[in-house]
Image (tube, rainbow, N blue to C red; front, top):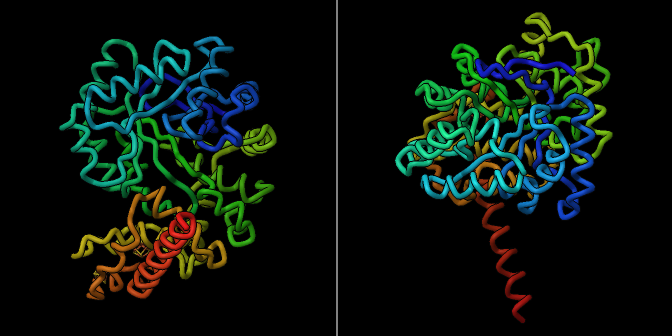
Length: 376
Ligand code: SF4
Ligand code: SF4
């Protein structure tokens, strides 16, 4: 296993981290704890979890595993999405208890998905409460976890309160987040990436993404992981493991790995942009929209439908659970054309928004009819 320094914290973190958001059958605490321990035996030392993950069982699973290890053999990361300081404190205390630890190594101000959300955490006292807990030794390092656009995350990092950032970053959406990765590198902060496999899109569309493989990459999964951790500022890529086989494959992908140089990354990046004809790359150049429509979030959700062969389910899941946007917002587009003019991929954004609005309305109608059938 390779290890990289997490910013200036003095901690060396495995380049593959354990993302505790995908445990199968989370009620089976012991079986899943064994998977966590297997990861540790392979050299993984960064374990990421959160309240609510996996039917709210992820922290318990991690705790059951971590209590079997010496405290200096791992780093644990968890999060709070509360704006009020008192609520963050209560959540932190519960996390400490569930994880069976006296302190959290990396604690995250979590779910910054709207630009206003960071201000709400400051005003509500969550950030101050976390800093106080850090003074008390209950948190070692404070970070932020965000799905915002790269330049918006960069503004948060520039405030100087945080020691690291966790953000989604993959061969699909790198243009959307690159500004944050670069800024974190310049500021000497740790960077943990989520969804390095594009939320499953890369392995599920292996042929489409085959061109990202370098000579030494035996699979597109290995290439996607290496694409991620080759970026100098990226400390570790989180993978949501469900089996020990997945762990072995990911660890093999970084065995004796030499980071890709610019000679590999630059042409791959160009090819990604070319190959994604019809796909949104998340670059964000289409913004702002005068109607306040978060165009990149809708277009990213539309990607999920395209890559799944036209299924509406992945589109709806992405909107609801990843971006927390409502499909009817797509319907307020006035077709002014400003975003279309700026779109680097020349996507017909207006037609796609109209389609999303229609799909959303149809799904709502379906839900309503199902509810009525149940009542009958
Ligand atoms: S075309 Fe629609 S989505 Fe694009 S900027 Fe105009 S109102 Fe916003
Ligand atoms: S819609 Fe176009 S400009 Fe906007 S993020 Fe996607 S690719 Fe970039």
